[in-house]
Every structure is written in structure tokens, then in C-alpha cells.
Length: 196
Image 1 (cartoon, rainbow, N blue to C red):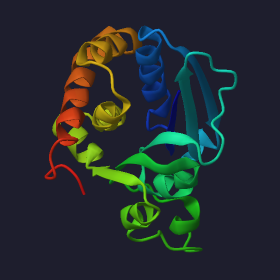
Image 2 (image 1 turned 90 degrees about the vertical axis):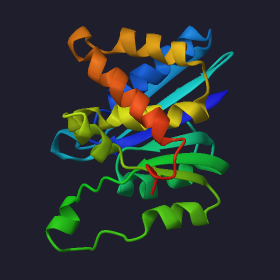
Image 3 (image 1 turned 30 degrees about the vertical axis):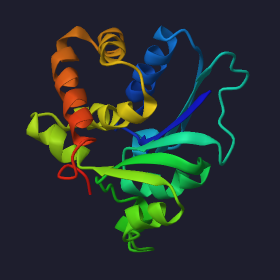
Image 4 (image 1 turned 180 degrees about the vertical axis):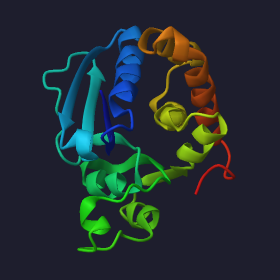
């Protein structure tokens, strides 16, 4: 069973990332269930997506403390959802910061050293400059696929499985830049230079 959690805020592309993950799992012959939970997503609120895959999946929801991997498209989302990851599980998180309304209005401060807090829970944590890498491609909207590329090594599957999942999930006119984004993320997962 693979229990995969994608957390972001509205407009970051967590739904596309979950679709690509789901298609990859389906192509491996797994039973797949995907559940999307939208907060105030159109106003920059939290969006969480559960992807469960295995021989037989009864429920699309992942119980707290049982996710194998959390893909966090924004730092605060890593902090918010890290409790859903099983002991020894993985977190792949972006360095991107999107200030929530309570921080913007001065009601609270944005937490510091989030990656250290996540690591302190004993979770294997990789931090990727996904937004910066996507900007280097000329389109920050593909930072979700950069992060998915970084997470792909932890999920497993051969490169051709991911290639086909991208082809099926992304509109043809955006396919090439998403291929590049995925490749950048996958390469970033191998180098310390791209992390942290």
C-alpha cells in the first residue's frame, strides 16, 4: 500500500500533482483512490489531496500518522500536515513561502526553521527550491511538477512510468515544460545543492 499526501494552497497545482501520481499508480496495476479536500482554495487556503494505492483500497482517506510520504508545495503546509506522516516516513517540501492572512494582518508570525521542526519528528525530509527551479524554466506554475519529480524517487516506479503519467495528465501544449520541470526535480533529489 502506498499512502501519499499532497498539501498546498489554492492555485499551486496540488490537484494536477495528485492526478499524475494516481495515473502512475494505475499504470502499475494498483487499485487507486484519490480524495481532494479544498479549504478556501480560491482564496489561497489549504488544499490537501490523498492518493492511496495498493492491491485493494477501501477508503481514499489516509488516517493520521499513516502517510508514507508528504509532498508539501509550501513550507507551512509541511508543518500543518507532518502529523499525518508515519514514523520514519518522508517529507518532500518546497522552500516557497505563501503568507496566510493571519500573518499578513499581523495577528501571528510565520514560523521559522520549519524544515528543522519536521526533521525533529524523525521524518526523512528533503527541501527543494521548486519555485526557483520552475522560475528558471520561465514558468513558476510548474513548481508542483518540479516537487513531484523530486518525490518520484521515494515513490518508486521506472522513469517511463512517470513519462507516460505526465503525457496522460498534462495538456499537450504544456507537456514539454512539465517534462523539463519533472526532470529538474528528479535531478534535484540527487544533489545537496538543490536542497535546503
